[in-house]
Amino acid sequence: MNDVIDLVALDLDGTLIGDQMAIRDPVRRAIRRAQEQDVTVTLATGRMFDAALEFARDLVIDAPLICYQGGLIQAPDSQTPLFRATMDPDVVREALNWRTYETDANWHMVLYADNALFVAEQRHPERFYRDLLGTNLQWVDDLESVLADHTPEKFLFIADPGEVDRIEAAMRERFREQVEVVRSHAKLVEGNPLGVSKGDGLRRLAQHLGVERQRVMAVGDQGNDVSMIRWAGVGVAMGDGSPAAKAVADWIAPPFSEDGVAAAIQRFVLGG
Image 1 (cartoon, rainbow, N blue to C red):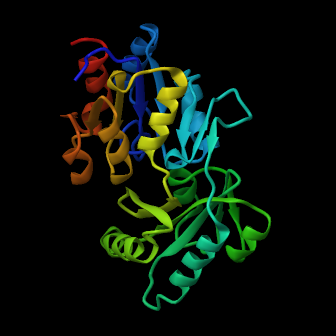
Image 2: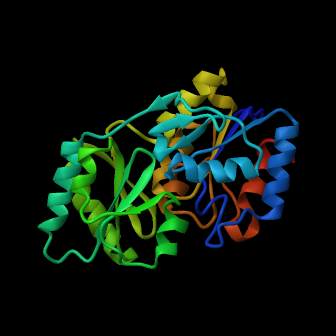
């Protein structure tokens, strides 16, 4: 493990921000100190670009952002992605039909397409969707109609935590050769374009920036972070992260409430 880090990739939800959608001051200071030492800091999130951009601007991040679980890499000041992956509309239709015929399904789908968030069934207050998923929220009568005019980036299912385990297993069985299935939150399981992952997105970004793998640190907390934690030269899992994230980590940071990101930056970037 190399202790000289040139690129730091930070997950958002559960890593950089919590339920209050705020970045804690010790974490903010650690990121600023890393940037002052010419370390490139970026965000790697399942959120859409516009949602990630809000936090990037707050932290004065100008490096390309990894969004949609690696399906989009784009600089904050650019209108053109470095990389974009989209999903076959027919696969989304299959997922919609599959969910429809699950007669005991107490869960619903959200569709991401053309940097917008489409919801047909409102099971939660609007703030729930905006805080957890993104601000460019559009209510529609049915999700299949969205596919006529928009290119899908990914879809996800929202359910109670106890139900998400079953949905994830069923999705892996049903769509294993069509989509990448990841658990991104206690209430969310996602279907992403085949081959897309945060790890692959981080690999692409590091190559673009000319940074060697061993000089990359990634910090995350959930199953969707496993690929980038495993790929990075220094992979860090949050102390309150999932067992899957911790299993592949080189180091377990303190939990979010104890500023785990700041501790990781201090240890591996700032030298102490």
